[in-house]
Image 1 (cartoon, helix red, strand yellow):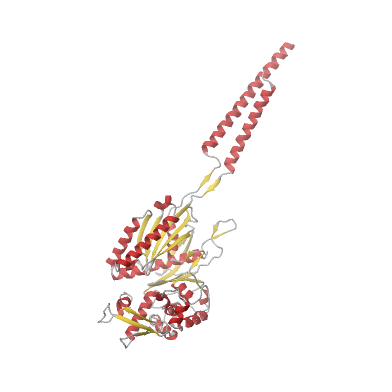
Image 2: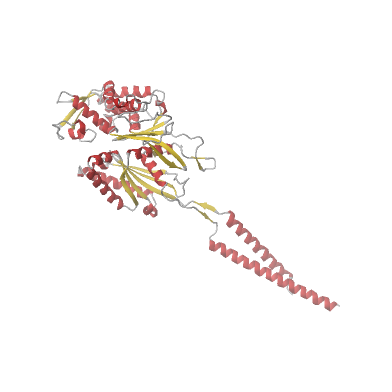
Length: 509
């Protein structure tokens, strides 16, 4: 017969085993946590007309309605001119390639080494290469091939080097501006990404070196050639966008200088009302007339090596009037919705974000964010009226090439926005001049990366359990075995006890 202490011990083992089995099962089921598949990264090289900028972006491998929630983790400016200038000066080329290698190394540092071979890298060339391609397609192709070979030698997943269209540049900039302004997504109380209730999009104004872009959603939907459709976060947007080639800041000023040379009667020097008073500089004819945008101004006796001296007069009124002549407004006479050069433009409506050259010019005038048209005009007049030495003393850290040109830039922006896009004293304050939002630069490259994430497959997350499968199975097997053995022991003990009681009863009879 089994003793009572032994039976009690077996019962105790059984109860403990059952308790442990239940506890392990509860912990394994209810304490599991969701594990994100991690982050994906992407590298975009913005090959502009005046310089190249490298951006690194990251986003969760899972996506919101097929589009990644992207953050900028690195911006690196490549020293030297844009890639469209490659092959002109070997020393300048060396400087650019060396600086680009530095930026690539920085991108390697912010992306985990284990993810290098799965990180896509793209290069998008803009108006500088668009102009070169229209002028010399062979030269443009050679440059792209050189860049392509370099990018293919990197540890990243090379996806392509191409010249993007003006419309693409405009739509990507619009995507960037609205994404950073929170017009596509926002976090709710539960920290989940949702579409803002009643969200309205903002227009985008981009002023580059060789072209300028405008993009916005017009009040009335227009499905013409100037309207593009884009799908983001499960919603479709119809965006008007147009890119004006040769109307970028640098090319526009080049055209101004060319017209001034044409009008001058003296071969000794040419007066420039947009240069500061008493500022003198001598430029080569090639630097002015060598561009496709100024080729029409060349005379029959054009000599690219000749030198032209400009003397600044600092006359803001005459500067504004001269800049006005750079636009072809006559082709819009009699047309209701027309900007310049006969280009269709719906009525601008709502808020706009102005960045790149727009922002840098406003910053030079001591302005940023939103302000009135009167404030912009008074700041422009004050800046343009300053003598060169006074201006240099106030802006000692600014490069001469930029400082001398901000009077032109300000008057150019006025003519472009007021006479071209038809902003007025009521709608001008709806423009916000910004460089970045939440430490992310406003540039077409972010919109390009957001659009690309629509094409990059998402990864599924998984649940991480408190215990590994082997540990969980081991615990279940051990304590289930103990429970079974304890139960068998108790059953055997009970049967023996019954037999003993039966024999005891027979003997008693």
